[in-house]
Image 1 (cartoon, rainbow, N blue to C red):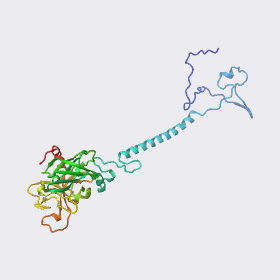
Image 2 (cartoon, one colour):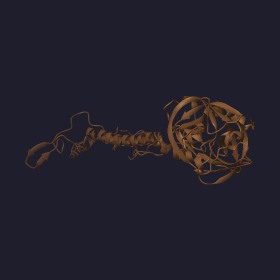
Image 3 (tube, helix red, strand yellow):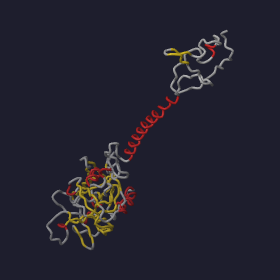
Image 4 (cartoon, helix red, strand yellow):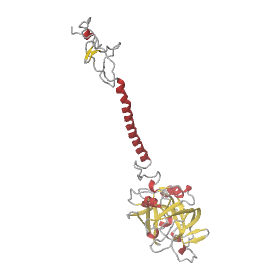
Length: 374
């Protein structure tokens, strides 16, 4: 009969030996029969035609009456190579993951896998990591936010500076730079010019807010915190002294909380910025007047003193820390040739400049934006 007596699906299943190789029947419970050597070149297997064995013996037992197949390599031999291959694969994967992790960490830290600077920007500033703490880095980052202001009034032409604080063209400057102006022209660091209108002024703090007409997408300065500055801190000043747009000087904070008195209107003096000379904005300090007569209408504020070189035209420009943050608005500077009673024939900065702390500006900004004038 060819019909199987086993129900469907009940064929014996043998366990698998080795690494997924074809299954072999389970080994016999007794020791397999061994060949009997009878002479050179002749091998007799038990049950291979000996007396007492029927023909069925040739097929009834495993190996009886038939040559035994060559022994197969044990499962241990095949498994022994698996841990080695597995370890190699794990090592490769670890190397790949490690490389990816190193790259990710490098990018987060501002450097690529090659260790070179990526020019990332320091949080809260406009100075790149590689340039933080350098005058060149500060100048490159902040100069595009400083403008030259030309104001025309009945007193003549005056030149000052200003700081862009919004991309739409809001600019902070000194009140005395634009006081009494009938027209205001602003020149960007790129050379492009705009007409500006006065939004609000505060003569008591010598601050003014002007707005460029039709401007958009401008680079803006970062307003810092002047409460944390210390005497000896390094600073950079950027402005347009004598009409020289984008001039950069550097120095230190030489004193804090200096009581500086300046004129509130153009009657006391107007900053003249014509190249080759001109008078500076008058101010008082320590009971003495500098750069002329401040007039009858004056205001006094607490100022940051710096030895960074400031000259006529720097008023309204920026005093900047080494992170590229604005910490003051330059407002007054001592010029020996303009000092009353001075016998010096020299002109220009002598290392005594003053700036309005930026915290004073930030506290006054909403008032200026509301269009209030004093």
